[in-house]
Image (cartoon, rainbow, N blue to C red; front, side):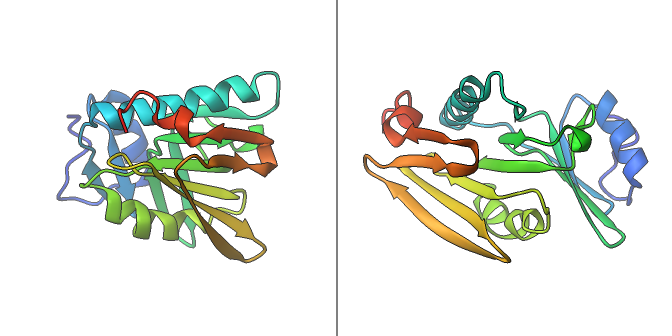
Length: 188
């Protein structure tokens, strides 16, 4: 781990970003505090990769780009900043895309794991809702065939549960994917 990324001291945004460039371990940043990220399971990787692959193929030739795992999303609120590593992210606004992070995601997908599920459902969702460009937040279960889609509807968010043979849709991207496709390699 880079010497710039010590868990007991608060870091500035610039210190964090510089440290991440040199670090062999990814870290998320919460208003100065830094937390190392754990590795992911095979199912977690398969689900994230399948979602990203389907989005990438669908968006080919369109202005939106798909990113997976190593691209940070930046959230700024008042004087505080957060940097998270979503499992999958789509950005449709080139002005918000930087070399190592994105300010303007349209879609964020998180694959739930026992260690991060509460963070993904609560703290991250709370932070993500403050991103004006974000219209869709998707939570993918890895231990059962279940996807929860949160969609921005004006100033509120609606919740949709996808199970069984249902289809995941992101109307703003004209994207559809059967749940069977997402879970095909997981054995679920």
